[in-house]
Length: 144
Image 1 (cartoon, helix red, strand yellow):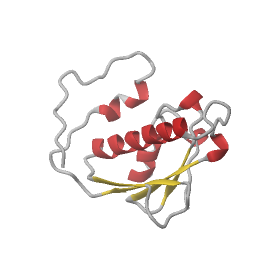
Image 2: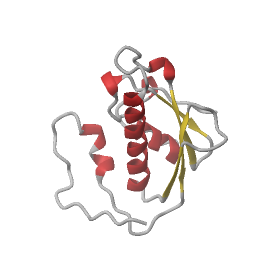
Image 3: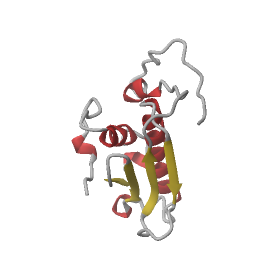
Image 4: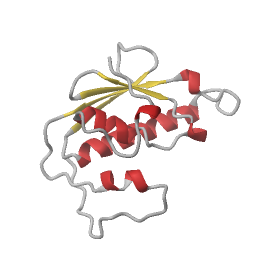
């Protein structure tokens, strides 16, 4: 099992594999008070699992974990956008049956998805810096 933490991710996404790049982009997702209440598990070159990290839950402001789940959804969304920006087909299984109770989603990235064009991969690293998207004429998003 390979688990990445925020301290392992610096400026650019790692080039050591598709799944690591997807996780690197997903870890830039916004979260409640920047708690980043997630853990990513790389199962294979094409499969990721997203887990809730209850040790990072703010029980004072979020006793039922609702805001933590919103943060996890944001991380999952960033992962899907990162995978699709690499021209990958993505299948997401939310709250999979038979998994541990803190397993939130399983993401499988296929080989290629023809017709998918999302430019956000270039925007995510600078989204909070106030700079604009470098793509002036973004291509339309085509669903698979």
